[in-house]
Image (tube, rainbow, N blue to C red; front, side, top):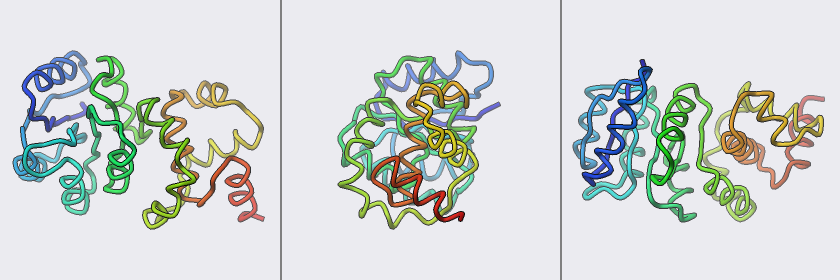
Amino acid sequence: MISVLVVEDLQDHQIYLKAVIESDAEIKFMGVVSNGTEAINAIQALKPNIVLLDIGLPDISGIECIKILKPICPEVKFMVCTVHEEDCNVFEAIKAGANSYILKKSKGYQIIDAIKDTYRGDAPISSSIARKILNHLPDHVAELEAAADYKITVKEAEVLHLLAKGQSYQEISDKLFISISTLKWHIFNIYKKLHADNRTEALNKYFGSKT
């Protein structure tokens, strides 16, 4: 069972997310808290697998919650679920340590899929957010370099090898059994880690470092 705690202050969204989570037999709904202070206490006490949290909380923002909790609860994965898709919010959430980022307007099955992908470490992201990241990446590489303190993962290496073979996003998505939006998230992370602005530069840096 994947345990999920919801951090959300709006009642209608609380009800909706609870109903979505409880609709899947593989996911356990651990409850809901409505502000950042409660979230910090509850997450440390309950240690859920996934925290589904909003950015715009009434006291401490969701981004600040992640910054505080990530070092204390490194095993907990944070999935931002918000109405906000502005670039500043996206990049601040990523820098804080968010594992995935999905919009509240997403359909129920998309939220369920994102929870499961996040639990598996696939780091899903809404397609509209992925487009923003990839479109604006060259402008933000310098800002994100400080966060690139880890190496390419096995999954990212698989993506790089398939990109090197000239395969399309759809072909790679089908081969790795991941969504296009999840694939774009992997590519974003690859670009960030390699300090690359495009596919060619990423491939040259990665494979060049192995020769």
